[in-house]
Image (cartoon, rainbow, N blue to C red; front, side, top):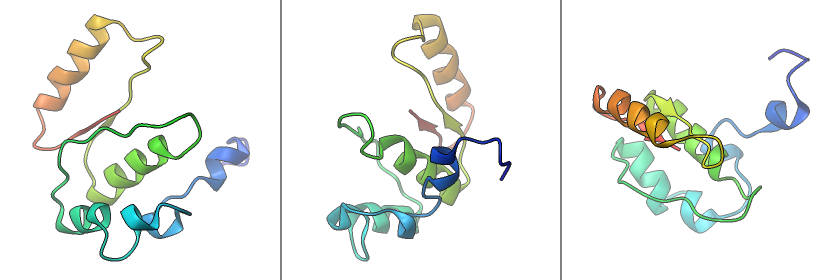
Amino acid sequence: MNTSTPLAERMRPKMLDDLVGQEHLTGQGSILRNAIEQGKIPSMILWGPPGVGKTTIANIIAHTLSVPYFQLSAISSGVKDVREVIEEARQTSQAILF
């Protein structure tokens, strides 16, 4: 990874085993880990305050399953942007919309 990449991005966990906390969701035998290992991710909403790992978890799921990952900002994205991303996601069998 490039050294000009921000430290926070370089330190971000890349695999489920690298995550700290939420063992009941991410640990061995947990619902999220089982879903990822089976390749069957249900529709879900990741909710919580900034900095708790929502984006990291979404990235890990997308990377682990090699599925397209679309990220939108609720602040800067408009209805047109949302419609475009949804249309792109429909073209794939699976996608992560975040």
